Structures are given as C-alpha cells and as structure tokens.
Image (cartoon, rainbow, N blue to C red; front, side, top):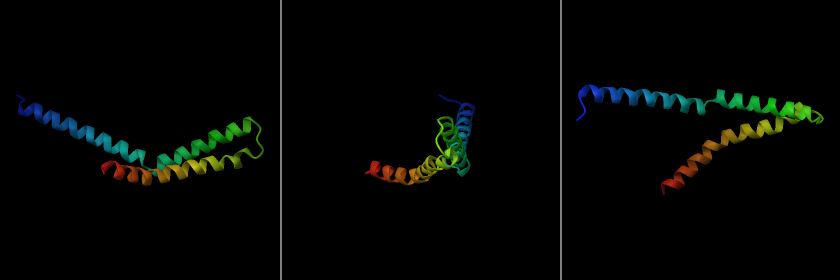
Length: 88
C-alpha cells in the first residue's frame, strides 16, 4: 500500500506533467508558432524557386505560404467537427 509521501510525490509529478502538457498545447496553437511556420515556409520556397530559376521567386513563394497559413487557421475548425463525429 502506498504511503502518504508516495501519493504526494505522485500527485506532484502529475501536476508537473499537466503543466508541461498545457504549455506544449499553448505553443501548438499559438499565433507565434503559426507565424514562424509561415515565415519559414515562405523563405524555404523562395530560396527553392530562386535556385531553380523561376521568374519572380519571392512573389511566387507567397502563394504556398498563404495556403499553409490558411490550412493552419482552418484545421482547428475541422478538428472540432471530427471530434463531434467521433463522439457519436
């Protein structure tokens, strides 16, 4: 049988874990993360288009970066719909 000290330690471990999970969840849904992903997507595609000598690579890189941003903004909506369907 667990002692009171062991139970307290286990509760504290669970609280610490929950705090880490909440911070990770906040990061995953943050606009900072999304903005950085859009920026890195734009830069990577811009460099790639420039290397393969596409005309106006930096202008053309906007389209996929914008599409990525749009997908990150709409995925939470579709996730909620999926979760509701799963609950039925």
